[in-house]
Length: 272
Image 1 (cartoon, helix red, strand yellow):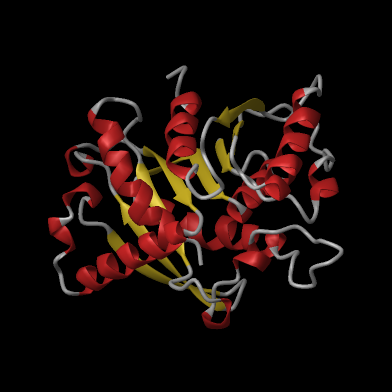
Image 2: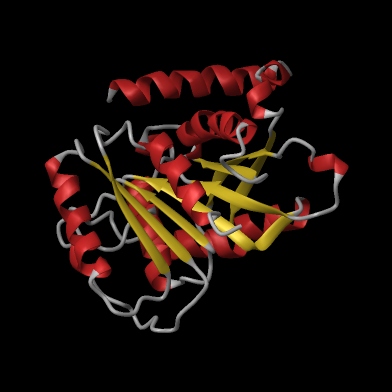
């Protein structure tokens, strides 16, 4: 396991252990997040959902943009607290942050990101579960959030890193209207790139926006397919969404997520 994931996974263990003990309130950057366990009927297994409400949430009746973080067991403690720093300087709007977590890094104990986040691939039998995971988000996770929180259904945002980034692009290509904002950090397209170089019948122009970041120091096996995706879609005269692509100078495969999150959120809301 990479050192980055070891460190952040340990932080997540400490964080969630504290949550059970009622001490998470002292991690004030997380604003005392809520925890929900969703037993998915679509996928027949549980997901752990963490929700950070923006400061001032209870003082207003308005709805908020909502960011869904894939790999939430790692990205939620990392980016929900980082979001607080960014909000202090006005770099991001007030938003609800939702972490969608497996609760483990081990596929034997339920982390099926290699299935859930991917389109089919010729050399990976376990790839190809993205349609069902998308159904889980659309029919179970997002309705739950929007029924229980003042979440604006017209300002849904999805963030994913690596294979999570692949799912972000899968969603943008197959159901571009499901999320208004898409942030893909170092999308891992190395086993099924051809799928992502097709339109999949979505020629209608939507209001959706897609931000794709590739670290300059990303592993070559990830970097080259990501650049191929960027080159292809940047050359199209018509896409279903507005597109912004960037190279994050000096960022590696695992270091890019915070920069992609900050810059992606800034671009999504630049006009607002």
